[in-house]
Length: 284
Image (cartoon, rainbow, N blue to C red):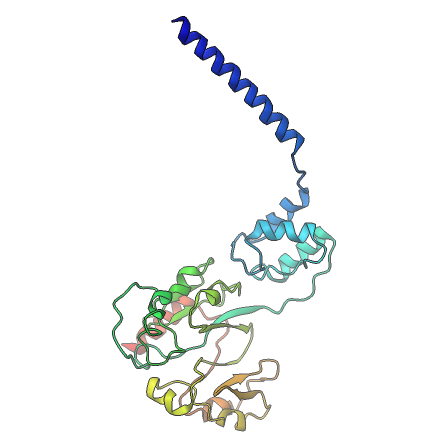
C-alpha cells in the first residue's frame, strides 16, 4: 500500500514539474500574433480554395498583414467587396478586380464526341486520363467524370445529363479550383459579362477534329474573317475571342458562320438547375 502511495506521489510531482517547465517555455518563446490577422481572416469567405496563391484563408491573412508586398485583392471569391475591406484593414490600396467565372471549353458531350473505347475504371478524370488519355477520341476534350465538380468548394458545378459539367455563374466565384483539378485543362476563365465563347479546347487540325467530334472548332477562320470588330483570332488551330473587343453584334456573324457551332453566345446569370432541365429536354 505504501509503495502505491509513493508511486502516485512521485508521478504527481513529476507531472507538476513538467507542467511548470512547459508553462515557462510557452511564455518564454511565445510569438505575438498580430490581431489584424484574425480581423482580416474574418472578412474572407473561408472557401479555402487557394485562389489567392496561399494555403487557405489563414495563410493569406497572415501574408497580407505581415508582408508589405502582398496586395489586398488576391481573394478572387471575395471580389471587390472583400478586397476593399482587406485594404482598409491593412492600409493598402486595392486595384480593381475584373470579375471572372469558370467556363467549360468543350461542347463534345456524350452524343457528339467519338469514343475510342469504353472506360470502366475509377470514376475520376485524373484516373481516366492515365489510360491512353481517356476514352474520347479527342484528347483535348472533357472526360466527363466530374472531378472538377467534386473539387468546387462553393457548390457552383454539377454534371449535366449530357456528360459535361455545368457551371452556375450566379454562384461561381472564379477561384480556379476546378481549373486546377482538370487534367485536360478544359476549364478556363471568362470575364463576367462576356458575350461569346468558343466551346472547344482542341489544338488539332480540322480533319482530325471532324473525326473526333461533331461540334469541335475546325480552325477554319470563317468566324475571324467575318467578325466586324476583328475580335477573333485563330491560334494553334483554335479560334480565340478577345473579350475586350467583342461587342456581340446584332448580326452575330461569327455564330452564323461557324460550320460546327463551336462558338456559342453566353447567357449571363445561367442558372444551374434550369440549364440542367434544358439539356435534359434537348437530349430526350
